[in-house]
Length: 260
Length: 294
Image (cartoon, rainbow over all chains, first blue to last red; front, top):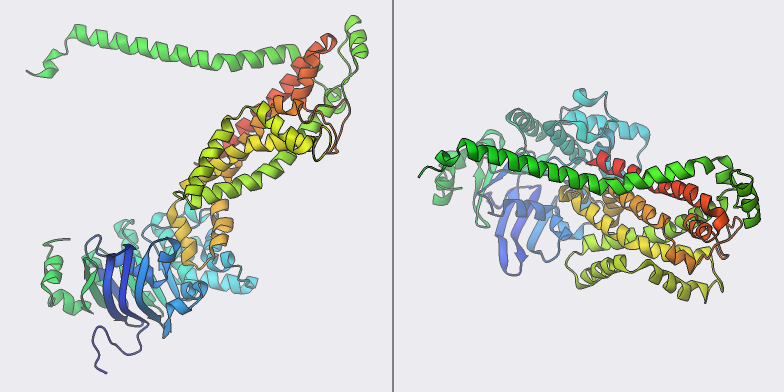
C-alpha cells in the first residue's frame, strides 16, 4: 500500500468520507478523508466557518448532544468504528479540550482532574486516585503550582492554569487521542506558549489533533497540517512541506494572508 | 454651525438645575417606595414586641375569657401561638416536599426543550398559574382533597393549595438558573462520557444549586403568609396538630382569628411581627445566597 495523506500505516484515527450537516443538506464538512498519525501533533487550519471545529467534534460524537445534526461517513479510532463504541468508551479514548477553559465550578482542582471517573461513577481506590491526579497534573506541568491547593476550587486558577487543568482532566482517562479546539485562543501569549510546549511534550505518549486558526502556532508545533476551506479538506501533509511548498492555490493564498 | 458653541453659561446652569431637580425627584420616589416597609416594621415592633417571649412560641392561645381577664387586670395576654407555628411549619414542609421535585423537574424539562410546543404550553400555563387568585387554589384543594380524601379540613389540603402556589416560582427559577450555566460546562461533562441524566444531576444542578435554592426560598416566603387558601382547607385548630389529615392552624390563620376576637387584638401584632420576621429572614438569606454566587 502506498502511503499518502489519506492512507498511512497504523493510523490512530481514520476519517473516511466524513460529512456533517447542521441542517438538512447544508454541509459544514464535506466528504473529508484522512488518516491521523500516532504520536504526532496534527493541526487543522482554515478560516472561520470552514468546518474545522465541526469535524473535530464529530470525532468524539459531540454532535449527538444536539438535534438535527446529520453525520455521514465513518470514523475508525484505533481500528474500531466509533459508532459501535459506547459513548463512555469513545470519550475515554478521545479526550477533548475546548476553546475556553471550562473546569467544573463546583469541584476542587483534585476532583476536576478525576471528574471523568467521579461523574461516571467509576470507583477508584484512594491510592489510585492520588496517582491519577498527580500523574495527570505532572503531565501538564501544573503539579508544582497546585500541589498544596488541590482542594481549592478549580476556578480559582488563572486562565492558563485552568486550561492546563482541563487538559489534565482529559489525560486522566489516558486517552489515545486528544482533541483540542483552539485551546489557546482565550489565553495570553505566556500561557499560550506554555500550552504549546506542553503539547509538543505530550505527543510522546498521545496523538494530538488540534484545531487552530493561528497559522504560526501550527507552524511552530505541528508535524502534520490540514487546510480546510468551505467544509472541504483542501490539503493535508507534513507541516514543513505545506508551509514551504503548498500544492493548492487556496492553501498558498491562506498561508500568505490573502484571505482568512 | 458648531453645536459646541451653543453651550452658553446660562444654558449650562439650566442643565445643572434640571439635573438636580431630577435627582431630587428620584430620591423622593425611592423614599416613597421604601416607606411602607419601614412603617410596617416600625408599627409591628412598637405594638408587638411586648408579647414576644418564650411562652409565645411554645404555648397555645388562651381562650377569650382568659384573655379578657388578663386585659382587665392590665396584664399581658397569656399563652402563645405554638399551634400556628407548628401548623405553618408542617404545611410549608409538606408543600415543599410536593412542589420542589415537581417544579425542579418541570424546570429542567423546559430548559432542555426550549422550543417544543409542549414546553411552551407548560411555560405559559405555569405563568398563568402564578396569577391565579390564591382563594381559587384553596377551592381546588377543597374539591380535590378535603371532600374526597381526608373527608374534612386538613393540613394535607392546605399543603396542596400552597404547593400549587409555589410551583410556578420554582419552575421559572429552575429554568432561568439552568439557562445561566455556560453551555461549555455541559459540554465538558459530555466530553468525559458522562451520561446525560448524570450531567443534569451531578453537573447542572450542583452548578446552579444556589439559584435553585434562591427560587425555593422565595417560594417558601411567598406561601408563609398565605391565608385565604388555608381558610378553605386547613381551617385552623386551637391545639397543636401534627396529623396531616386533621384540621391544622397556621400563623396567618391565627392572625385572622385574633382579629375577629376583640379580646385578642394585642396578639395580632406579635403574631404579625413573628411572621414578618420569618418572611424577611428568608428573603434576606436568599438574597445573600444569590449575591454570593454572582
